[in-house]
Amino acid sequence: MALLPILHYPDPKLRTKAKPITEVTDTLRKLIDDMFETMYDAPGIGLAASQVDVHKRLIVIDVSETRDEPNVYINPELELLGTVMQAEEGCLSVPGYYEAVERVDRIKVTALDRNGESFTQEASGLLAVCIQHECDHLDGKLFVDYLSSLKRTRIKKKLVKLQRQQAHS
Ligand code: GNR
Ligand code: NI
Image (cartoon, rainbow, N blue to C red; front, side, top):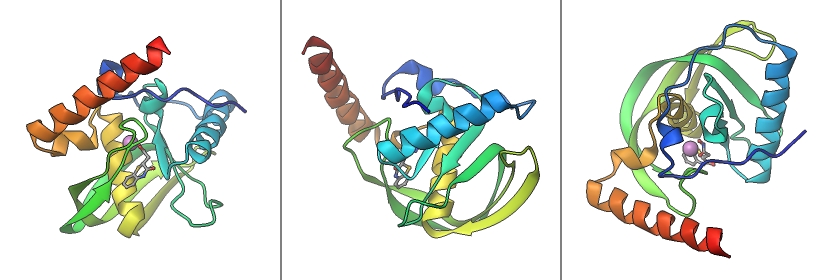
């Protein structure tokens, strides 16, 4: 297993639209394992392949308190249900920032699991928010895109400054 480097906003690679996965192979399962290790280490509740510079439609999630409920979604397709709510979101690609974002409180997702089998799941609460957040990553979208341009610009400037300092230390 291996920890994978996570891309940080405003890296333009985070804007890449991910391509559908055509075959679920052992190589892909190795990537899934590495993504879980990276997510648990961060620590985060979800990770999209886009964040580790792999532009394939794959996300991993574990919203459990006990960190022992790994969920894999390959080629996820979302159906938005329920009503729009505000929820505080953070992102491993936007470290240190938490902001309210509007999301629906209920979704239905259809995807392939790590064996290439199709499944459908209904989700609410944090899991529903996280699945929407991760699916956005696959389309090159970040939670900061839902904020005012003023807030987004402030966050961008601070992160660019931080990255410059880290590069020089
Ligand atoms: O770890 C994460 N926490 C989180 C909290 C609220 C809403 C979404 C998330 S996802 C985030 C990990 C991440 O950046 N996934 O892309
Ligand atoms: Ni994120």
